[in-house]
Image (tube, rainbow, N blue to C red; front, top):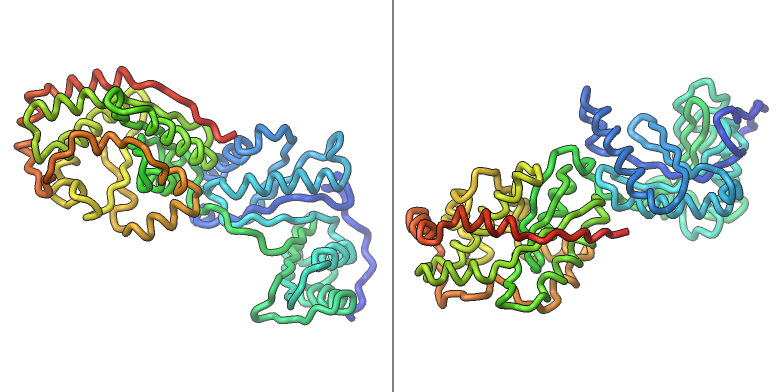
Length: 414
């Protein structure tokens, strides 16, 4: 094994000889050029909000493409075991924070070769299979090169635990990164959500049904930096409250990705009756969806949102043909975002399962969209025909009235 030079440990920046911490690897944020600091500042704020209820002091600092989090070592957290448990809690919360690509539990030690080796060997304890060591020396003043450090660690792991080395496809990898004032040791962590920090792209209002599609659409928009509000149209008073319960549960599940979610519920049953009585016939489904969009647009003004989001997927159902989607776009001035437009049902279901909304969406309820359904729905709605129906019901005024009656709920995840 390569002999290590004797150096005095650099503990100036460490509260204790070794500290449990979390490394957050960033993705497209690092490509943002001059605007990058805005993305990072918002991400820091979202990180603090995500752990606020844990009651932990949190230290955050930035490295190149990485954010470092450490629980403040005060009180009980001065104990290494308690500090490690707190870091585990923080790491778990970070898995749901948009903008984070990978979450790695790490140990931070003084910039001294033997300290890094000791921790790296501890990381290998109890792990089966082959391994690799990846060392990176950002500070060239460090007395051991990256290759020498990797060889020292690898040799000691082999002697102590007997694991074979496999540099191409190891079962686990130990990383050692030497920075300007400290060393981080960690292993591969789970993938985060990626995307952009929530709030970076503005605000949108999601038309949330009780089905599978719209929660996935909301998630995908959060991942692109939109902070989402939600509006649910129930069939009340013509149906029971089951769909409202589902919508509440779905928003609560989605809240873990952004925090501070708001759900607005509109009793839509009577409005559907008015449309049916106006002679909507085969246009009933498209007409009521236009009214939903108009109502959402009326709400958007006071909620200060600048776009609407729907779970439409081209051709999935009769109301989502290209002609009908064009007719829906005509009903409002706000842009309608459709993140699922090119996905098939299998892809949408897979994503709903991954974000844990599928089980809730599959619960039975009385969907307002199934009320007063015509025997045959129009697949090529004409805008002129829809406008005539709306003139009979004074749709714009009706939408304003519905918006005023919306009830607000706050389904917080935490």
